[in-house]
Image 1: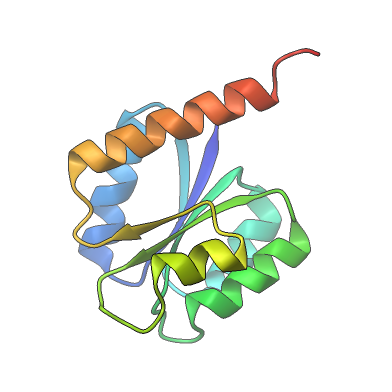
Image 2 (image 1 turned 90 degrees about the horizontal axis):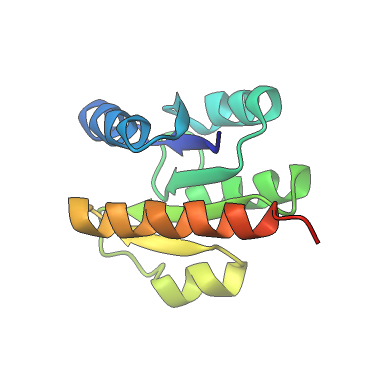
Length: 127
């Protein structure tokens, strides 16, 4: 089963997002801060991370770098609800797999989760 780490400090968004991801057939672990996210990441070794750009203790782009040091192959998707100077182009330049703008609409999330399932299936197929 594909394991997703969801990092977001907004409880309502994180909990609803996590429930939907689980109902779509994924295993989900959550964190509400960078400190907790690093601990969960090390213990759970997720395949994919949905990472809020604005966390209370560290910006998501910095946390992204820590995750990539620990696992250069993990797929990371930034999530943001603010119109910051950090754009989808910036996310791609860092090496992120994608960028989601809050509010994340169900149809966009369904499409993304299907893409993730397809990528993982392709990467684990026998050669």
